Length: 424
Ligand code: EPZ
Picture (cartoon, helix red, strand yellow):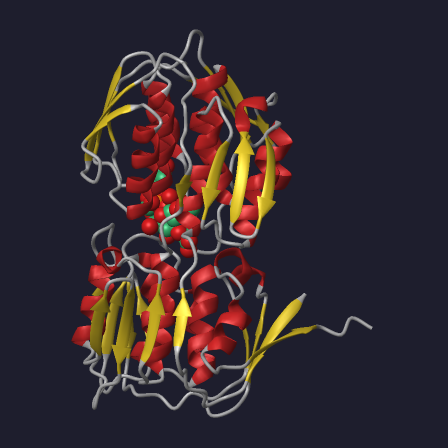
């Protein structure tokens, strides 16, 4: 297992180019299952989750040729409908094959994704929506056995909770269904919007894109004619690198980003005193005389994203005063708090609310452990402003969602060393 070694007191200098969004690319790869032709996909991020999804599609029978950030994939050759546990356990987003496989083949077996560090993350809403579309769902030996006699039927679905991958699964299922589906209380994340746009360009009659209410006229199991597309930039990677500027209180720029995807995050930087400059294809953060404390409540898009909560908690350790964060989406997304307190922060959690008390904290480097993807980036942020070196274990979490992390940091004058644990 690798670990990262980060020297203290490092400040960024320059610009970081943002990669394609992992959470857009995952549903977009799954939706190739609905296509009758080969598709070219550009700006694919080179992260382990994407490679895992490609491995899964390959096991199902898809064929693809890969170049850096670019893939030509033909999923019309898929001849298996079983997403096995050994793959699904490494990436929960494998559940995104459920809707497309079922609507195309009338049956599929997808391993139930386990929980994960940030919460139990059930898929009950995915399953009940498919049942409303006429599917028979049976859970046995840790697998979802989904069948439908003669194709899924269009239905009116009201999502009890706003679920990103739940919305994406049902949107894809509705595309090949018989009849019209009306989806209400649908997630509006930019990643969901791009999925709808790609499906619309492939010939699906979808209305209401970008709103919480979609109508989709199914093609009655006629496969789609998907067109080439480019994955949208990763708003969470961009927000994370802007936090590098914030926590070190130093100017820095992220390029290849759509600032409209980050409005709630940019607003919070402003509330903390930082300057934000938005240009055509870039965002620059500027230092502030005094880093102000912040109040954050995570919520669905376009509100403040839960995937930026840990990173802002890191920045809040350097604010002049007490900040308050309320994590409303996941029941256990504070695993990074114990690690931050080991570095000298003073964070208390009561229920869903974390209070970063008596900041600013002089953080000291030490051995810490990454617990989930975004928590690991928060630890890197704290290591940059610590007074001594930090080592971060279990960095496989990081590689799932941050492309070429050491390289990108090197480009902004920050050294992060990846080392191997001496197993001798
Ligand atoms: C997506 O996860 C993202 N992953 C997550 O990003 C992100 O944190 C999350 O949306 C929220 O924005 C991908 O897009 C691949 P949800 P998802 O279904 O779809 C509950 C990252 O760091 N729920 O929107 O799994 C659920 O427990 C990852 O890149 C049910 O109760 O999240 C949670 O409390 C982490 N039943 C809430 O809804 C269901 O059937 C939102 O979850 C589905 C969800």
